[in-house]
Length: 205
Image (tube, rainbow, N blue to C red; front, side):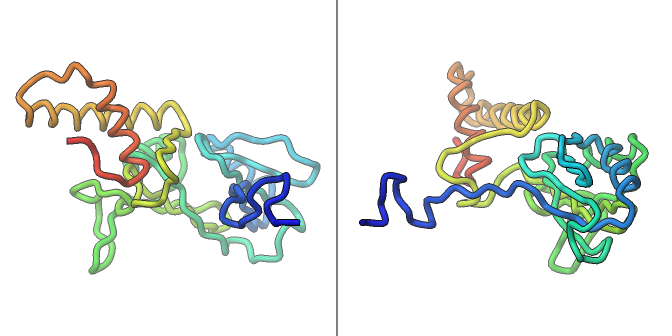
């Protein structure tokens, strides 16, 4: 029988695989649970002995618990993507969470403050849980080409969508300045702009 059975194309490239959970090593489950709840992460229903929490707007969760991993507590490192690193930093500080100052990466090393041009992937801040597991907050508003399949556009939360709409509004204002006239077809322009941000394609002029 052909690999293309009743289940469809069996090619590995066509098998949808979504990252669901990352296991992080902690030394004190209750302490770690309290910390991540303070971040505003959702506590999910799980079997006894497993704690699972999901960041707001994320499709991937974290788990910890006795016997889940042999890795040393504090050895994990992962990225948390935000649309505005300064706003995320300030929200964490307001919640009483210790987080490093915002910085941006350069060829000569890190520099204090956000990237002056607010380029995606460049502005960051560092957050550590009580065990020392490291989370790197990274500001991303426009994806590199090929990082999002086709014209798929989605937002993890209302706040992310609102931030995207504000960027589209600002860009559309510049568009109207360039053309010298009001654009009554702004909904289509906004839609094209939002898709271009996530797909890494050229934004509308």
